Length: 429
Image (cartoon, rainbow, N blue to C red):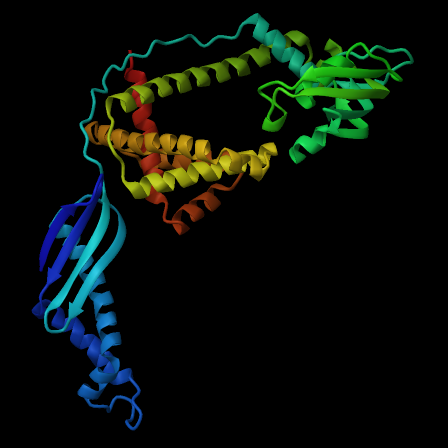
């Protein structure tokens, strides 16, 4: 068998396999015998038809079956002879077979990229001390206080304040037309009766929310403004809008006292609550600092090592990123048509991110090889336990799924990847 390789582009190779009739006749005879035994010819009992009649009736099928078997059996041998670091089989094409001449076919494969590993020791990363300020702690306490807030019917004459709960009728127009006529996507902000909304800019049209502050139940107000250029609905950006408001009722927001807050979070004193919060916030700050350093190390390595990546791996990474983005968009309530309008930009960003992911995989793998970093059984077990906690599943169930999906090597590689990154961060100066 002769094996020839030809470059077919970045990280892609054509492997041309040529086996003569002496090398293929064994497989051909096996297939021919199978057709002799199983082929049905009118006028002959099964397995009793002459070879020439079998060939005449089934030659095309015999050749196709032989081609298929030879491509499978010669593939591994061809890859070993070619000495390629194969990533994925992309295609088998240009297959030509005959019992007299043998077989010729082309295998198209993605191969691992070749690149020069950059200097990775003592990467420059300026450390920042993880800390929690009194202002940050105060903000946290107030957020918790807000989380336990209650709403009570406001007394007559009460003036609306930020974060109160308001029931109103409203109608929004642009050029005397309902807002929804400009774009159907604006239906939720076009007009409603008995609409409850919290006086919080993130909950509704910001300009309308601001206008409600200072009003009372029974008040009517006309709000004139221009939609911001950051308005999610493109057709409304910069448009002059008029909103007619009628405040029907108000529920006053009541935040808990220190004692009530402590009772809710089950601590004795506010000082104890603050101290516990400080510890948790400091842990979070430390994790963020570690993440920042990892990001700087990653950016450094990606900047110093630029190379093409296998098309199949890039495509898989892009699809994974897009799937994750779609799930997150659905969770946030983003409509499919909004995603479709940004398709090109989303795909462009996903491709850039995917390329970085795949390149980083190869860079870290090469560093791990040079540093002889491996994954011990104890480290893999610890990773599985961590996954079980994250997904709220039994360790045994996680192990079962890993085995069933054939992901043991993926898990080992992830442990090695994490260990290598941690080593680089610890070594950074």
